[in-house]
Length: 278
Length: 272
Figure (spheres, each protein chain N blue to C red):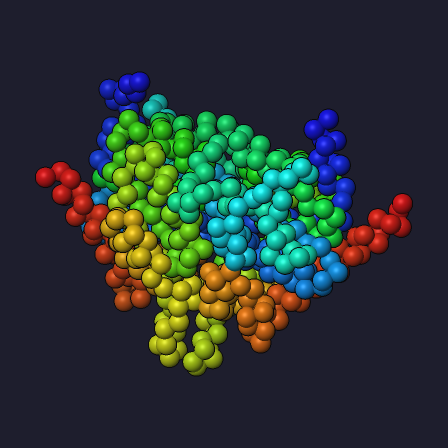
């Protein structure tokens, strides 16, 4: 009955994309926020961003929604809207103070994730983007399980170039295979830094084992793109603004936009194939 | 409830236990853990590192021992020594995986069981310091580790952040976790604090600046220092090299050794 409830709620979701990484701090939330902004630029599309990082919810701040609270209505919880066509849900909205810690074990976290899927009144959505914490544990198993009634287009996996990251990301790719989650592709973030003064490039996170490119070749997954470091990215996230709007000329913006387009194309193809089958 | 402290346990010979925490992922907990261990080793101390990040164990590779196996002895698991000196020993789930790419897809209860074992069943012997490296967050691993270590009265926790607000926001929650669990905060480290271009020496604050220092002030805890982004440090971690030994002139060296010195000074204060 619960599964049926979830299926019913998620019937109105056309495309679902999970943003994953085995590794922390590689830019999952940053990417999720920009993907949401990028997709919502088309005002005809309805976009939803769900943040299931229960212990470290970054999305409210990145979307400029810190301090917002969730409202209940007859039809469930209302997402918090950034734009008319871009709604957000995060545990961050349920906490009353920025110092509040969510010190929960797995089962309680799973319960909240289920509530997020079952009780949030998203309405009709074209894209549901799910931002996750690093790892391969409760949150990841649960989201795949709860979304099994709906249709997940696939996962976008974020990494940085160095082996310390890649070794965790390979585990995440294995996780996806284990739970039969299609992989849309990999994004290599923090891929080089161009000094604003002398324009020389430094590899702050060196791709000592060939970076994401080599890993993708070896594991037969798509490399969606590489995004360089840009100090404006962190600044925009801290201010809660879209980096894509704040720095339209940045090479990082170009990379992000190309990646977002590829994801859109992947989802559209999928939809088309599904319709053909039916 | 009185916790039963056995007369002789595997942690009896460990003088000081400290945890490295952060609410935020990817800020450099494992980096700080390893560099702290190396600095303490260079001050003549015997150090162990317990890596309780079960999903993303980074520590073995940072010492180039990722292909090692662990063995059992009468008192439990024998930790992996990083060199013949036996001055740094490690335990990590990384050593228990059959293949390095194997994902540990466990829910909380299974993680908790292994952490309890890691805390109780590693035959550390005599150590000056046991550093416990953790995954990001305030969940199963953290709750279980703190509970299991409580009878052994840890020295406290070092919290690592990067300068920007998004990180600091998560680390504030970690401070609350420490308060709620009675874990003393030894101080905050602001990592990835500025990058000096090796070509022209221009400093760029890629991840902003100052957030960690401000947080320490706001929370009334010691500020242990700012560590800059240092490609030689990243490279050393990739290759499992001893950065402290090999790159004393590199930009991150002063800050890292200063952190270790403050920890050492703190333990002297504590015993006197």
